[in-house]
Length: 154
Image (cartoon, rainbow, N blue to C red; front, side, top):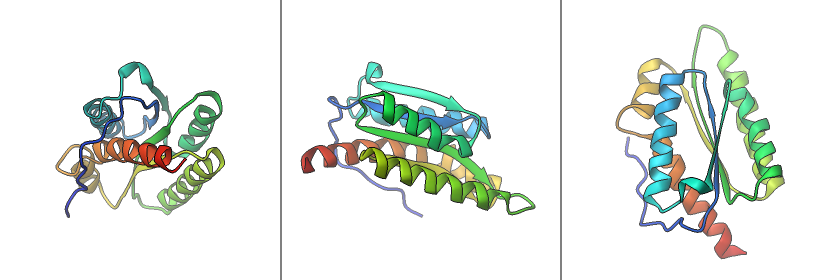
């Protein structure tokens, strides 16, 4: 599986919110660090990044909605890790999380990135958060690309 590639993106004028779940914290911490690194690489100032931690993926949409209502942000990135267990609980959380994040994006009319891993097992989650795929980094880069695209459209 090949990761996304990005051209040079100048995010120096952008304000970005990040909401990261604490559940599966070693994985979400790595995703958050990669995300911040991607934003910094694009020139987003640390003072223009707002980070909020929440208990789990289910809580991502409400925190993203609150950020969208209270801040002048160009994009919001939601980061979390869901790993399939013995029940269908992960499916319910993933559906609620995805729908909630999309509703926030449509309501706020800003990009709200779905940086939530939905994996079958821990190995898949580790590859995407700690290993070669770096989904936190991709979410950061995608947020800058989308925020700049929205500015160009408007």
